[in-house]
Length: 289
Ligand SMILES: O=C(O)CCC(=O)C(=O)O
Ligand SMILES: [Fe+2]
Image (cartoon, rainbow, N blue to C red):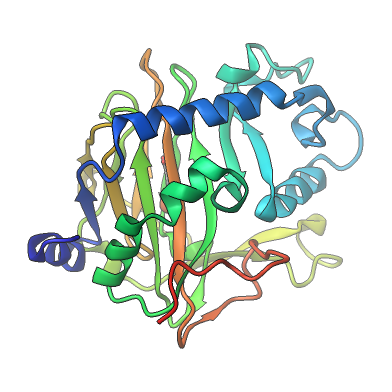
């Protein structure tokens, strides 16, 4: 599946592009199935705290987030919520930031793409022995209000030891500098994970009862070190778990929808119990050695 050049690019830079991993037709099918999910979703009756005006706001957000590990949950764009009424200021289809985190197990179209033969080959080519998918997201990056994703390493959120994690990010629409494509610091995958996002072990005592906390150093990255990776609908970007990447706010008139899922090595690597993401069922394997 991958050429020697692609594999070398991945080792050197921490990411690689696979052109047309899925067809335009597949892109449309995925977009159509999220449209149907949103049709069925009633934001007013979703426990998502964005709409709750009572209780501990921070805790209900965290609870909603934690519970989304094995569900299909909806997260709003901040720009789609009226600060006074806490109600959505636009049609729900144009107010969603992302849907997660179990599309790969619960939605047939997404499942098909996530466990496809092409995905299997990519993962094999990158030397995974017992790879499993731990999470998935459909990110909208809505026209005009699509929020930026700050620079990060995926290993900060999904940590295993020794660290062996990668993301497969698939553009469902053309991703350009204008509508918020991914940017990378080439070579940054050689850096260890400096900061982690974990379940708070001392929730009662510290951090005002926060359920989730960052530990470790906060890294400052220089915008000059990032290179944009523009791709066409159907193209995929494979992301090394230590590669520093980000995406900018989308102020353009076009959305930038993508489907992304993360793969962890289960062979001789231990998934951290501190990670925010804990599922009731074991992570589904892509293949067994
Ligand atoms: O799509 C984005 O803007 C960010 C996605 C991301 O960080 C990931 O897939 O790991
Ligand atoms: Fe990421």
